[in-house]
Image (cartoon, rainbow, N blue to C red; front, side, top):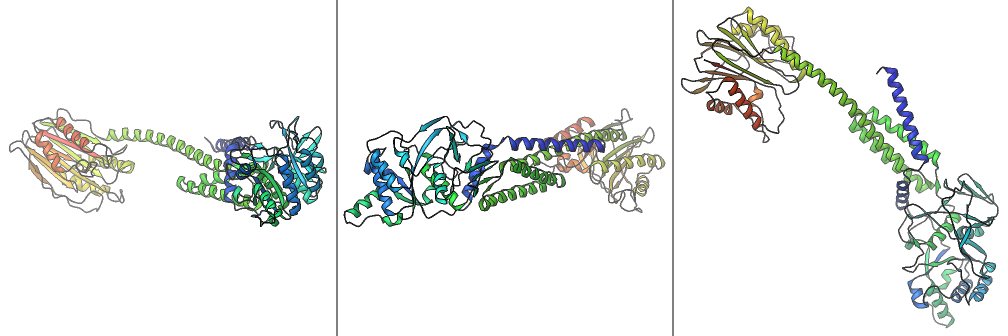
Length: 639
């Protein structure tokens, strides 16, 4: 692939990635996970400032136990309104539906009218599938209307409809429902606007916001809903009062007794009255907890408006740009750094974005997508590492092909098995630790009675060692024909290699076997041992060698010849250290003594059979352990 093609491929990858991010961002593909991350930030942030004027009056278990079954007769509500009016409350907001007419509606209506500041609820049928386009959601039917004359006396009427997300939690509400061409406000929202002196008839719906009376702007989601800013968990939110305890305290005061509850605490309060008894249906899961009375939602909406603390959804365009920036940063980190450092860099990006988005939500009330950017960080890292792995695999395959070629070339340097050399039975075996070996061996027929055998081991392994191996064999074949003496051959070979194999060396042993005189000459350049099995005594001896320095270490080195007899039935065994240094799972070496025992137990076998027996035992010994060095074994038997 030429440079221009690579640029086009990279540009195409970047463009496709941007389109995928745009699709994921605009289609809300990870909406369920974004909602979970939204709830997490609710729980991580500290409690919001809550108005001390808000009071929650609970129709709880004690109320139903002492006053009777639900629903409570409306004369109780009338009495409650009278009590709260006498206590000097500012507003009374009922989160209780009054749909069917009852005998006590006139009494209830009278109390509502005399208080002059009571707000009552109703509920609509909503089709949440309709597209709002930032206009109020429309309804074609009322689910729960106000009965009889109650709405005429109320200071305000509002709906208590909620919107459940896919996971069943309540995070959003419609601030208005359009019914019969009239805009019906949300109950808590209506009460707050009245307290602030805002005319809710003067509203303007714009993209992602609602402007009230040209004085207050409320943020909306892309679907036109208002995000409820729950200030705290239920038990810790606002002031809590028992419906029954208030009536009881009022009765005690009328009787001249000291009330159990100081009713003066209710002065100037905005009272929200709702059902909180266990087992009733007015509970829903919210971001802060799974069981939350909906009267708390009304109070939360009210508190949000008078405190002007709103949650603003950043919107799809902003979230797309953020996701794109995270993608670019993550991509740059992955492309510039190695995998481990790239992982650390992406962790830093992910943690930093999590902290930033949480702080922005906590202090500015802005909801940014969290899951999609974090998903992008993970996906980019996995994709780049996968791409690098793919490229590395391709490179490795190419390298392996080249190494296979190198192995074939190296094999061509090694001699073919000698067959029929008079009086000798020869076997050779070489197993590289890698694709190519640093071990070497060669056979040179000097004449029809003399055979030269070379074995060597280049320091190190792999390609570099194999190149020195090839150079050593090439030089040896020249000098072996020039000098009939083992020591002279090694001396010439040493001078040739000195200076050419910097920081490397070659241990080497050269043997000339004279089949006519039954003698052998050997010279060693730092290579040992040489084992000789003598059939006459049935013993294995280790020939003492005056081993000189390895080849390539120093130019002026003198090597010695050592003479020994070789008779019919004797066997010469030479090898590199990869044989006796083979290790098992306990990190024990195979050792020379094991080799001697195998020779003693198989002395009658041919050279090839003995070689197979030694190698087989080494393989069993080092089973499941990686070969750490090249292994070469040569056996020459005299017959």
